[in-house]
Amino acid sequence: MRVFVTGASGHIASALVPELLGAGHEVLGLARSQESAAAVAALGAEVRRGDLDDLEGLAAAAAECDGTIHLAFKHEAMRSGDYVTAVEADMAAGRAIAEAIAGTDKPFVNTGGTLMLAMAGISGRAGTEQDKVGGGGRSDATNATIALAAEGVRSSVVLLPPVVHSDLDHHGFVPTLIGMAREHGHAAFVGDGANRWPSVHTRDAAHLYRLAVESAPPGSNLHAVDDEGVPFREIATAIGAGAEVPAISVTAEEAPAHLGFLAAFAQLDNPTSSALTRELLGWEPKQPGLIADLRERHYFQLQVA
Image 1 (cartoon, helix red, strand yellow):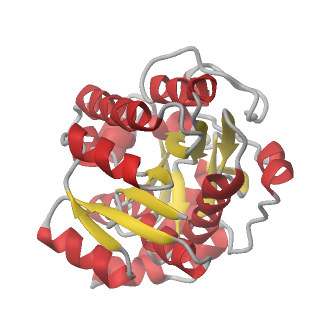
Image 2: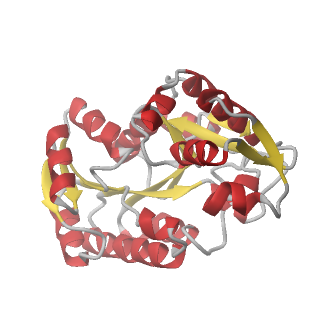
Image 3: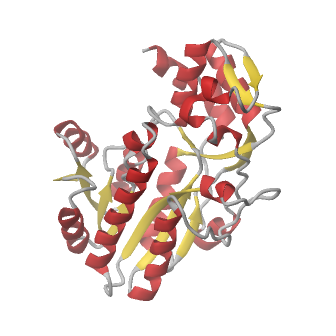
């Protein structure tokens, strides 16, 4: 299978491209800069220059390949507070890809986030693959992708937890929280910190994406979750230990000063199950969980370098 991968120089793709190549697939990777192109080529993929705003280019690449995995997202816009622009660009890219492969039964694997379940009010239990979010934010793209099953596309969505961790993670929420802890001299959690975040190792997530593009049934909603829910207090404590600073409780009102753009997310309770995903595709995470990975200290060596 020849697979088109957007965001091919990013965190998850750094594990996904070798995963696909190792399984005998060919990869066409989207790269928006010369630096990104060099990184994609170093992974062994064919490079296609472009970005999420190049809708014609996205459509052409998807049409010429046997399947598409959409990882790219305007993270810079999200981090700067312009989440709406990031979501709109993601929706437009997904539509361009979908229109190019409608009626072909080609696989299209899109990406969403489990935090949308918490933002939709699912609480008191673990969210499942059967839970649906009505709309808003990235859930619009999730719902639109699932609906493509009725248009001759073998569509699926992989919902990623807020923490996708490994030695390949240089810019995700964990490095961001470590940076904040070092800046402020403490790792913060809100209130009693009992709210839970799910997590998954990058390489386990990459394996799920491969299984999805190879065999996920049309309209599949998949959860890339290993740790169902780690109390945020434990995450902050592990970060504090690694950064050699204390973990402290802050109030909801104080949270923005300590956690920046993550303040609201850091208060969400987002336990998430992947039981149905595991049963459907035979996916079984094999890598270390979040707290064990933090104890290996690669994140803290990265921050010092």
